[in-house]
Image (tube, rainbow, N blue to C red; front, top):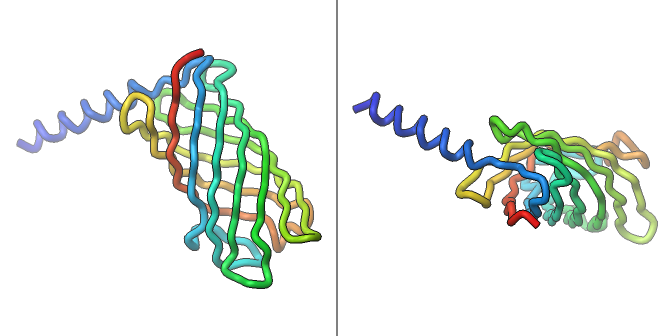
Length: 165
């Protein structure tokens, strides 16, 4: 019985992995949640954030992205942050792991503006042929003040890989 169950799990995993096709001309739409004490900066201990992304596969396994972020801090003295940015991902097709880079313009309050390049490592777990759950670890580097505003964290997202153009 255990061997049959193990064979079934392996077959199911192989089928899910086989669907992980990151093909040229596909469109990507995704969203994620960050925070819930899963991110750390020197100036804030708790925050919650959302991220919306849209992208286009310019080649097999290579995705270019645009993104919009909103972060809310648990402290009254820290203003909410809005950011827009561009980035890219390279997918390792055999296992669904992706490596990402991005650069964001961050604005908060009346006087806070920052440019933040970042990197991330994530995993696209396919639930069906086009919908994924995407956990990722990320790091964003602050040019304004490295100690207080650079961020390392975990985000959980959902991605939809749409039709070829």
